[in-house]
Image: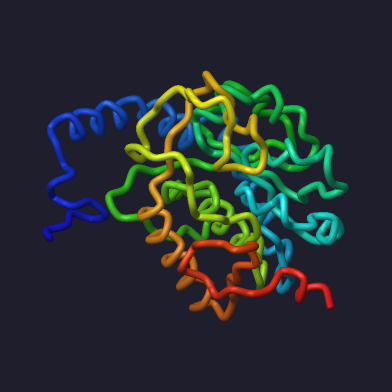
Length: 272
C-alpha cells in the first residue's frame, strides 16, 4: 500500500487537499503573531520557566478514559501530574488536582473555555485560541501547533510542535521539556465506543458519553471529533523513542488499557 507520510494514497482526495490549504491560510495570522507579537515574547519567557523544572522526577499524565472510574486518583494527589481536557469533571469525586493542565483541541477550548479559565493551576493551551483566555495571566502558557505530514517530537516548547492527533502527545512533550525522568500514563483507554470518520467535526447525538469517564464529558449537541487512534499510536511511538533515547521512560498504568505502545505496569504497585 502506497503511503504519503501517515496517509494512505487512497485517503488523499481533492477535498482533503483543499481543506488543508484553507487551514494553512487560516493559520498564517497566528503564526505571524507567534513570531512577532509582544504577547508571544512574554509567553515564551513563561515557557522557559518550566524548562527542566522537574528534572529527574516522576509525573502522572491523567487521560480521560472510562477506566478513571476504576482508578483511585486520591493516591496521586501529592504527586506531580498533568490533567487534560475535561478532567475537572472528576473533581467532585476525588481530592486529586493536577499540578498542570493541558488542552489544545480547538473545539474543547471554544466550547469549554470559561470552565477552563476557572482552573487555578498552570494551564498549557493552544495559541490559536488565545482570544478565549487572558494572554497576560501568568498561569496561561500557550503552545503553538504546526502543520505536518509526518509527526515529530519537539523538545523545545518555545518552537511550534506537532500535536500528533491527541492531547496526550502534547502532554508528553511538555513533560519531557520539564525534565521528568519517568512518566506514568493513566486513563489512556485508547478505545472508543463511538464509530465514524476520525477528525471529522460532528455534533454529538448520543444522550450519554460512554467513551469518557463522565456521561456529560461530550454531551448531546456539543461539537467533537472522533480521535484518530492510528495517528495517536504513531505519535506515541515517537514519544517513547524520544524518552528512551534520553534515558527516560514512559509506562502505562491504565486499568485494562488498550494502547499497545508503552510498557504496562500495575497502578497500585506504584505506591508500595
